[in-house]
Length: 246
Image 1 (cartoon, one colour):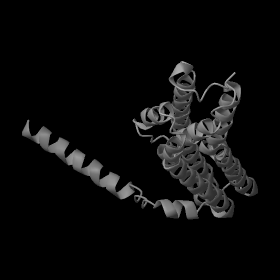
Image 2 (tube, one colour):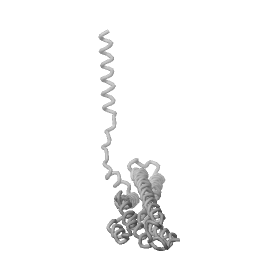
Image 3 (tube, rainbow, N blue to C red):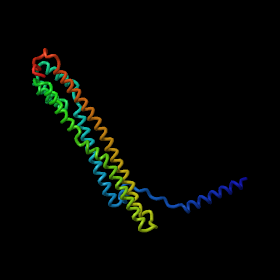
Image 4 (cartoon, rainbow, N blue to C red):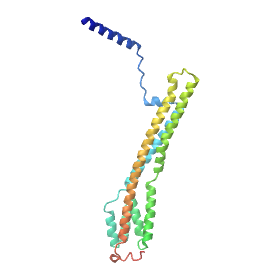
């Protein structure tokens, strides 16, 4: 019985030694920069273009996010103070309050105050025009971010196609092409696709996030304009300043 176990142990030792002798050496792992370097000139150009798009998308996202957040910051007591000033016929004080507040809402209300005494249609039109201009400012460069979201994956796929063309071209020249000769084209095909998708995903998510914040700011502007119009439509007996409205 012990001889049988000894024979099995010797068999395992023999097999393991044979495997060690015939095993291929483990390939050394490559860094990301080494892989990108092996993509070749077309791969470098594609990745450089995608990097430029990524930096552009990054700048637009943080710049717009900061601007939209500041635009949406309005004091909760702003409309209450405007109401008190208007109802006390202190239009100059109301305008000064609007001028000292840097927000789309304050600029809309300031334009409405400047039109007090004119027909209600004119007041509403003036507020709406200012609101449209403010929305245009909030949406600045968002279309560029949306374009990057769609263009980056397409540029990555273009790099994939050119990489595969390069690989098959090398293969057509010699049927016994070593794997390292095809590595450049294959690396280009994989790396450009991955980078293009990453840039596109970031731009797409960033675009939708900013659009949601713009919509929130727009709703805030609409609510403030409605409150101001309601204030002007209160019974005229409280003040004679609205006697000319129509």
